Image (cartoon, rainbow, N blue to C red; front, top):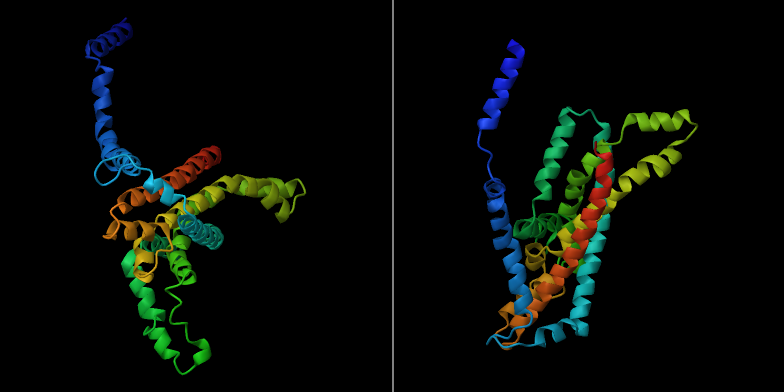
Length: 299
């Protein structure tokens, strides 16, 4: 009787507590949705509207027509190419490093140092990164001056101002980013899966092509798409290296916004930004789908 009475009393206490309505519980999501609306939705809407609006507010298709011009298509092709190239290099090199780190003891000093180093270099970009490369292998860089007595080994003075130089600099932060993103996926491979493959007569080739490969493939492709979007949207690094050319989409947007001779370039700049939004949206949608597929092996 005592136990029954106590349970009944507890139920009565819980029943007497007021139940908050759904609207009150939803208040906790207000900051998130407000942040998203101000910094994501509103800028996107302004870009979409601005792509079809002249400086005086009138409707215009001038920006869209310039967006579809052969010159702009070439600029988008170049941006897509350099993003895919640096993403591929970062995926391969970073994937190998991530796998090597996963084989080291989890709490070892070397592993912690490497992960910390990758975390720092993955966030190191922009003008400071460009200056570091210019001070190293630029026209008057330290390495360039040291190798001056050996002309065959001296870096090309215009290398960093070329697309190849930009790609090299991009790889500096693409590879560490791949390590940070892909390392959890590699760590998710269970030793029991390899042991089961060997017990069934499988080889290392069988393990990687039939077990580990299919498991890691969604994460690998998702990481590549993330690196692609990271390079496609980069601006400050390329702007510091290539100051006189508009060979990438972000540089072309800057050039259009600074143009004082043609007042119709505002719509063109917004149209370029709209094109970038569409590309990144497609990439991120594919990334989300791949991460959803990879999540089944995360447990």
